[in-house]
Image (tube, rainbow, N blue to C red; front, side, top):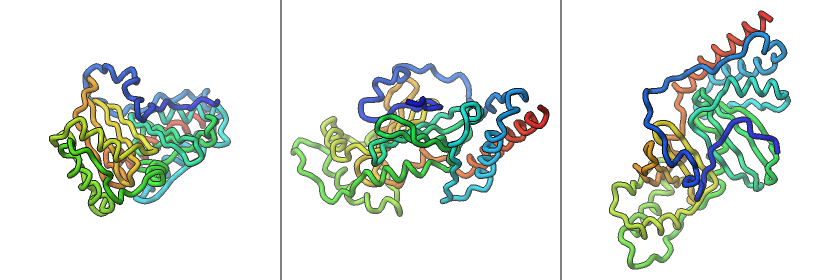
Length: 286
């Protein structure tokens, strides 16, 4: 199996308690800001013209990105040294994701240090890598496509035990809001509702598990999981000690917390342009 070039955090039922750094994370000492990845010397890039050209293409894609546009560059054809330079420049950001594919394979996705610039790798059911690309977008379209393709509409509520307290009105709210998700996004906040463990268990079974998970780690962590219901997402926030702070269902195309905005992408275009300019100067001086 060809190793994935950037690490991706595992997601899904049962995965988070086994995440070793969920057990404890030190409190942040200061606010982090963007740090340009360390770039190689001129001697190191003398033979990496195709990789430098690709960095320039990514900067141009980010500079002209418009909402609704899908900007992708395939990395097929780059050799190991060229891929190493691309990996070095893109770095590893705070957001990762996984998506189960229709053929039994999976996509592993890592945001770079440039917000809105994503590395997307596809693997078949045997774990063999079948695709490697970089996408400039608020979030890779593949995640939205797979979340919708692997979900269903809720047409009616199943029978429920009489002992449940607030599960019935929450189920009715889901039923009423699901088909309005694109026009009127809606949030059901379990943290603020008087729900029992039995209520939560019944609702969790009702929404089921979807094919997509997005995980962000910064000051605390955010876990965004697609459910088996179309446009219904489970969004949970944890503090740095892994205490659950907020537990919600978001009924929307995709939760805003997962998205890079236009200003982020414009800033990334500028930063990528700076990296490309430096690399071109190093290349020219060899």
